[in-house]
Image 1: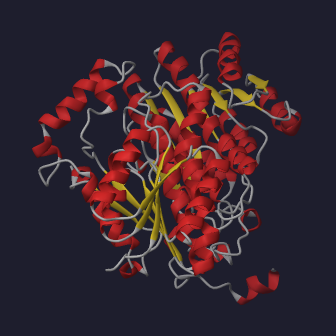
Image 2: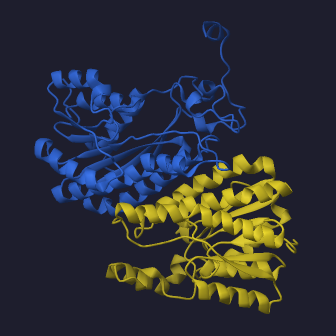
Image 3: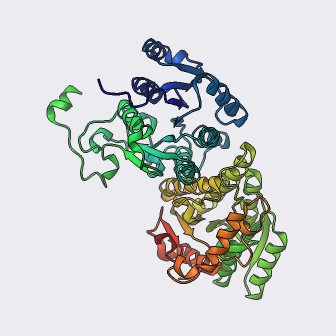
Length: 271
Length: 260
């Protein structure tokens, strides 16, 4: 049997409830990680995954805190450290998309998106970074970001601005926390099933036939994401720091749609 | 490359880069709204310099973290000058708190540097739309790409501005409005930098800033740091009719320093 890749490592997943959170729980638990899970539903949305990982002997603690409030995050981390030990790996995967236009957008929507995606990332990185530095163990921080840290959406400027902000947060953290032995990397995830609806735009045709803009015409999944997070969280990634890894199957390589693989007749029929 | 008769709003025009941009635009015949928040004496000085060149300007005070004040500013400028052709988003805070922001100070920086840039764009779009043309220029920083190592949240705001610019460029193109970004490196604004003067900045940062001045020749391939006039001449070019096909671009203006 292969040795576990995250034996007894404490992994803090900042949004367990979403699609990426559940995939991360399954994959990281299978490698021996102990899980600290922030769950807005207080665990209800991840009952099946929780039962599965606990049955396999993995320790998991579910919390539900406002990640934009240091006054909630810092004490929560202290209490969790008492039960699980200090955090070894922070995976920030909050990903709120709300349509908002530059011209007509409302301030409260802008702040909602910016806070959910960027402020939470800062508050968590600062709080966890301090805990990791105090523990004196090499730590890992992984930000699950998006190709929209570079490519505009044409539907939610606040979303892409929040991801642009997280990109710079990661780069700053890679030096400030890097000196304390903490590695900080970003995954810029490309389209997964359903993103054409999530990013529906009157301005950009980026997601039209999005599946076929991936050269292989096969979309990635949150399980692919979980594999890369696992690698970045593991000791094998020891020389990766301050990197932005675009994981989109090559989606962003297309220009003016010249390079699209056209659907096969049979595939078309099947759809 | 005539800019004569156009109307520009320059935020943060009481000091530094904003002052240099406002004066240069006015020298080329642009009617300039000198927007300031804290630097009242600086704004007056900008206006005096413009008047000395025979230029036309008004002073408008607005806190760019406050939408009502921004909207009132745009309305006042359009009422006075008959529209807005050019917006130079420049007003920004840099607090040099490195990784040690509390939640409230984080908000203060985001609300000024990023939300303020967005809402200034929102405020001028109706006037540019009416004319079917407009130039929006965002003063960002090399720290939209390269980390600062002295101000995490400042760099986050610049990373956000990078995407605000790209989104605005595709969304506002249909109105004939272009949106471009200038990313200056170190610019000498004729005063000691906050790194050298702020009491809460650790001594190592002050030493580092002094070191940068000492080592200019090998940190800046062109042999000097930037000047507000360097930014101003690029602003004038982007504001002109010669850049009709330029939008969503970010131009690094740093004497080559980011290459080393």
